[in-house]
Length: 493
Ligand code: NAD
Image 1 (cartoon, rainbow, N blue to C red):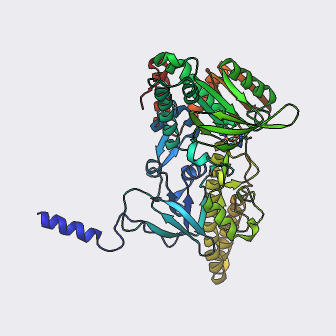
Image 2 (spheres, rainbow, N blue to C red):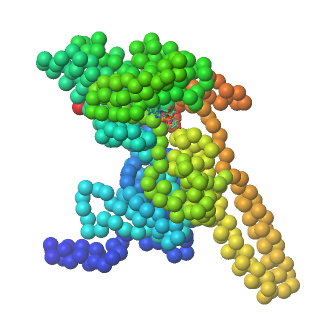
Image 3 (cartoon, rainbow, N blue to C red):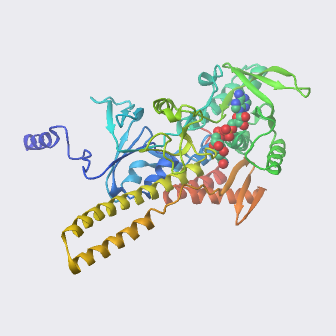
């Protein structure tokens, strides 16, 4: 019996094409989608996958609800609650979508292939391959900007991926435990308990708020002796934090941080990072600059986005992108300038909007509509060609019937082709600022509302809850919030 089973298994898997392997339909175009972030997943969610051979390539096999990532650094939310496995998303699609867990290392624009590299710890016989495409969507996001500042990559923690949040969570506790180690000198205690956040954008502000909450609500109960020395400082090069919010909300955030005892150091630009301190250029009231050393135990670096090398490389292959600096320049239909079959969505593309999740999600949904329409157009154009050929060979009443049908198809085609260019509709900006307060610049009917405070915090909570990817995520996040409220955060590593 075992021999028979063995034989059957062997014959099924013999050859290059095991049945589970993706068999592209030659009558359809191959659409390759790079990435599983906001842009790509929003596209996948809305795309009619029956129209194309869809292939997804991404090293991250889940979608991450990034707005709640700062809450994962302190254990308010467990990271699994904001992750949705990509395979679970894809299995609900009408037609099969092929997913490869791999990093796209190069896009060859001329040859129309992407190079994919399997980065997993398990080493298979094939670790690198090429995937041909007819149409390509680049939604690979961005990497953390360091501006080439020495020491950042070696010593700072970023806040972009799940692994980053886990690392920060572990570091916070490491700093606390090492600071309270027997015979630790007072200066060293102060250093270890100094939590420095660089970058006063929403990421830095939200993290600083979450960290101070963690200290006030939980850490102090567990380790009361750190009360005097635990300190959160937010460092920002510009004269104020949260530049994308209104002046009123910036002031509200700054005064709220003051009440929470979070220090904001504006006009302070970090120039160098060592393992124990940062060196920053501080602008003095007279305009002169002074270099200051700021010791830290934990350093979180949140200074925005930089281009990924795969995107830079693609730009170098397209002459029309020669002047582009901030990312792939796209037209109003999100087509990468200088190409006809490559589209760019999210943080890797420049479409005159801030690189936010909201923009990426709307771009992805727009592309899905565009591709669904293009497929319909192709089908009608095929039918029209057939009808024209038929018309040439028919006469009398039959010919009139064919002509009517042609007119009907042409009308349909005109209607479908009316899809307008991408237009971003800004729903507003929201940020949590700690101590159960949030700020919101929200578009409401035709006006704008700028609010801050506890009610806004409840609005922030309900907005984020409703934006979670799935009902499962929603239940888990709500459960985590309740758990943290009643039982505190989990301070173990
Ligand atoms: P950001 O680009 O918004 O802010 C980075 C800040 O770092 C800037 O204010 C910059 O002046 C400062 N900076 C840069 N180099 C510095 C240095 N050497 N020393 C000191 N300060 C320095 O970055 P982010 O917060 O990561 O956000 C990235 C994008 O994502 C933005 O478009 C943002 O709007 C969006 N985002 C939105 C939300 C939200 O709406 N709640 C949350 C997170 C991110």
